[in-house]
Length: 195
Image (cartoon, rainbow, N blue to C red; front, top):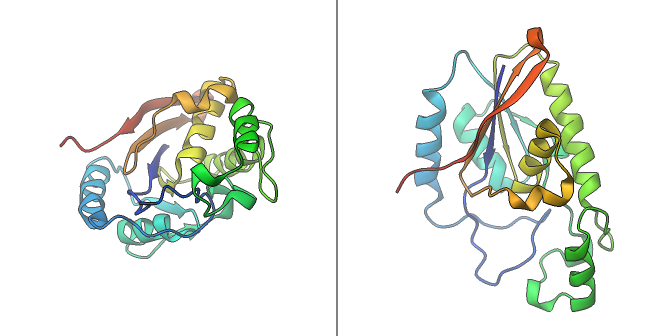
């Protein structure tokens, strides 16, 4: 089984807002990346793929395009919920709160939001569920936080190191699962269009 995790294309965020579980528009040229992703993924498919998407439009637009409208939305692969910080400019968040989060983002729970452990638990529950399906190829259109969580899970490294992984917009990360060998491996991370 090949599982491709695709981060949504770039968003339009000139005011540098914190937008984890808020809707935010895509950047102007987003469809050019849609075409590159479709071409890259089509050449890799061994069979008709199953498609999954985060519920947010920045993901579902791409999932709709790649799958010709045949995809499943799953709330477990939404981005981190930033609670009271949602749609605030990063530089307007109280410095003490931001410092506390940055010092321990794994455990620090943002007011009315969630911490990284909660994101990790729901992301990995989703991952275990798709591993149990009979699909040969799976496409998951999601967010950087989810992809980092899945990689931490597969590679068994501390969540504190999750942000050491670069996950760019419009990038593809591939995981190969071979149940017959009880094996789950990372084939590549953060593959992007060469410009």
